[in-house]
Each structure stands twice: as structure tokens, then as C-alpha cells.
Image (tube, rainbow, N blue to C red; front, side, top):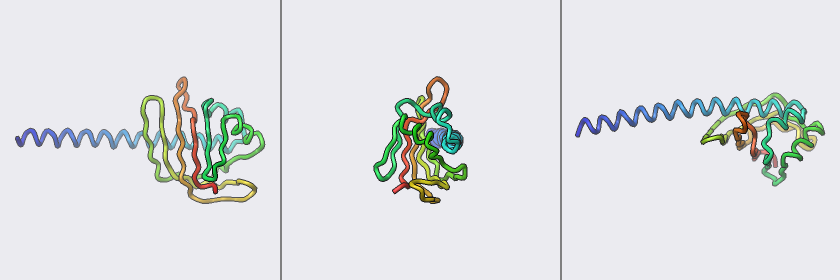
Length: 145
């Protein structure tokens, strides 16, 4: 009985260590994807943004305002961009098959409706791997009133 218990404890420890390693890898990879997204949004280059967005892309703000693929590219063409000054915290990423879902907080020096905002905001970004390229399917920003 002691051997069985010891085996169960050992298997649990190995499994937990593997999960921690997988979560750490997923978190680091998620941060890499987010940096790419935020840097691309700062470029005011609709071609670069089009390469990053999935055709079914949707964006939603806490005030109910939203944009689809075409509307997002139009915003970029009209010089609406983010600053390259941003930070992430509390990254929580999960992945399965060709999808990665990232819940996090971001602080961005940002301009919306001609007012500067610099605050932490909870966000959710979903990426899908399409032909070996990670594309953004959806982005939710809960910090814009």
C-alpha cells in the first residue's frame, strides 16, 4: 500500500512539474504574440495589421463599441494607433490545437477620442494558427469606457 501511495505521489509531482513547465512556455509564447500585436498596432500600417488579423476578427470595448476586420483596417488607415510604450501583467494563457486564449492586463500610452489614457486594463486576445501563422481572431479591451 505504501508503494502504491508513493507511486501516486511521484506521478502527481512529475505531472504537476510538467504542467508548470507547459504553462510557463505558454505564458512566454503568449507574451511574444501580444508584443507582436501591440507593436503592429503602433505602426499605422494597415497591410501589417491585415497580415496579423484572421478574416473573422472582432474587437470589443467595454462601452459596446466594436470593430470587425475591415473596420479595424480602416482605423489603422486613419492614423489611429497605439504607442509602443506598453506593459503586460497577469498573463494567463491556455492553448489547445491551433488556438491560444490570453487573458491579461495591459497598460498602454493610448489615444482614444483625442484624450490620452494611461491605465491598466483587463484584456482578452484570441489567436488562431492559420497556415503556420498566428492570427488574431478576437480582442476585448475592458478598460475603454
